[in-house]
Image (cartoon, rainbow, N blue to C red; front, side, top):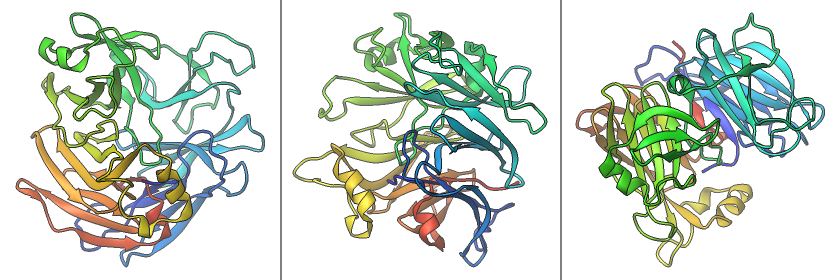
Length: 397
């Protein structure tokens, strides 16, 4: 786990690839003002990191407050703190040219939390979309908590525009899952008695999906309870639905993770590889679960503390749960599960394509080929401070 963020990429050298891996540094959790600088790095073939462009300077009330990355859209959006607490810079990064293709200035909502996503709007280019949970409008007055968007196309104006959201739009909405510093763009949902799903926010929209009755009895012991279901991952291929089987946080197996495959319109139960299944991320058709459990006499703290700095050590010590240093990968297409034993809580999968998984353990970056029989031998690709702060990876095409 990490409290600061990066997007990672590299020329892989010994690992076959058609492109390069890059890094983006910066916080990805709203409300942090520690002011870590945000920059784009290239990882060279020899494992060194070369800075490419600065996205946000460091310092008090600087740095970034949100980063969204979509390999499908081939875009990354960085929200950088502005000169005041209500002003932000929105930067759009092209994942193919690793250059900033657009910069906009926008006013931040001043009260309450904000939900943020990337997705394709019907008949439009990809867009950044946000919703103020407080209902505060950009003019500083209270109104309905509607959606506002900014087009990511380089030639489109930076003006915000209203967004109407429907269930048919949902497959194009990017919900990447929980990154290791805690950022989550998930959506609370509820199920009708027949299993039909609706997202509570935004707009109580029906998704046009129906959970099978047998799974519904497992997934929603209290049907209609808005807090019992949460969409933790969503992309054009899959939807992952997390639920509490019982409102007893220390009960073993009290959480359940279901996945819907849009390709064949089927639901599947993800193997129970962790006591806490909410720490899930999606990479195309793959789900990654960072194994975690509530602290007890056998696991009093997360593993690997000897490598941590004071910031990470303090953050993990405050949690009620601990990370075991095991990363579980579930291929939703083949229904096969893989496990990476890192023995380090400060570890995470950064990217998966159809050939390999890219992950970090502390300040070390690895890749491992994906084969029918399991994961192949890992290769060390790079090592350094930027790797330690990495949260995402993408490969240029």
